Picture 1 (cartoon, rainbow, N blue to C red):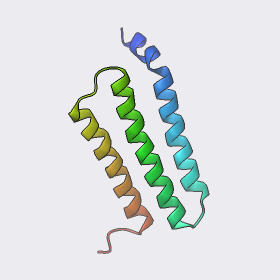
Picture 2: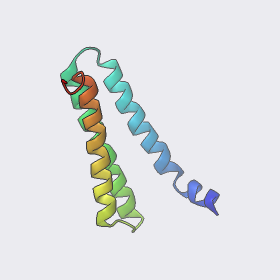
Picture 3: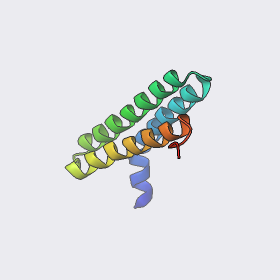
Picture 4: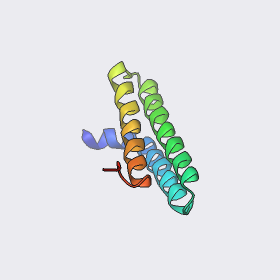
Length: 91
């Protein structure tokens, strides 16, 4: 039962791993340029949220709670990355 569900969504999982992997590679390979790293993080997070929302819309199980979850997870990822790139919260 669970195996069928994973097989049905294999393309989704693979593309999501590719999106996040390419985003990580872009940020990692951009060197010391913080602006370029932040741009890569924002773009990757936005694509993640849009891709997740589109996936649920295509499968007809999109509700407001899922949209908010993807947006908040993207915001959390951006916040963590900003704290790391900016060197902490300055305490």
